[in-house]
Image (cartoon, rainbow, N blue to C red; front, side, top):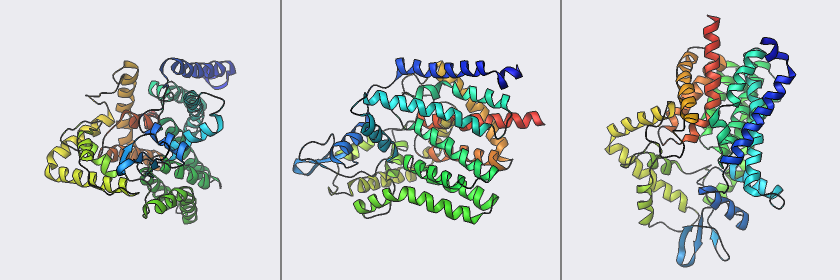
Length: 409
């Protein structure tokens, strides 16, 4: 068996074919066929007007979320991080005239998903021998939620790919002291910040943990800060020019209110948000989204102050849903056994593994902090299924390292 796993090329070929066939299967039966939700508006308006924005100014100073047309003015948006939209725009620019757009997006996401498996294997190899590394990678490669997410129009596949690159280059620097790793790590960090604005918290965690407390190489810290800032600075400059303020995204109030209101749902509820929008009296200019988000923020803080006990109770409901399972999900196929059983198993294992990791040092401890901080931070707002999908690689690595610790004892 050991010989088979470590050296049998025929087995590796069969494994590769099985991995690819599993993706082709979900591509044929379960892939998204259209851009939907916020992606379609942002993409269309960027393509037709050159402005990244939801809202279009039409007759009588009316601001609506729609496709821009002739004579319409698109108001620049600061609501969503831009990287996934730029990803979609780049695909359309390169392949739009020769290939079906949405299918091309899915195929490229599948390729990212496949390459993520290789990066995952390279990460695991830092801590395990060839046999164990391959076994752990097989679990990752065939995890149902990761296969399914690759055929959905969502930033999760891109985010998983970037997070694995983030860990890989962090380890290359920390364990092997490779010179270019700090630069590569910082480029990836900038991309992740542009993919999910809150990732700046985890970037600060990483450079604090490794560059200040572990390595104490302040040169690497300065290099990383400069490179990361260079990556995100064009978008910061764009936002400063449009909104006269230094901001990456401005959706804190929306997210806080969506997850904390009288119509509480773990996945968030927009009833009160829609009511607020119906009775707006905000100046129609480039700062519309910023001013609107401030209204949402004030309403959410007011609710939390008036209902502190309910806020705490709901917060722990969200923590439980993130850690394990949402007991009242409205998402299609959420309770499918192929999703819910693997999720429950890996979530339970990761919880205990993360607790073990907190008592260790090095990458195991950092990964545990990274995992729990994600849960504690996002539970302030609301929990969508894709949030937990992004953490599956972290959960598998944590569980593997905990089992290794147990075996060594």
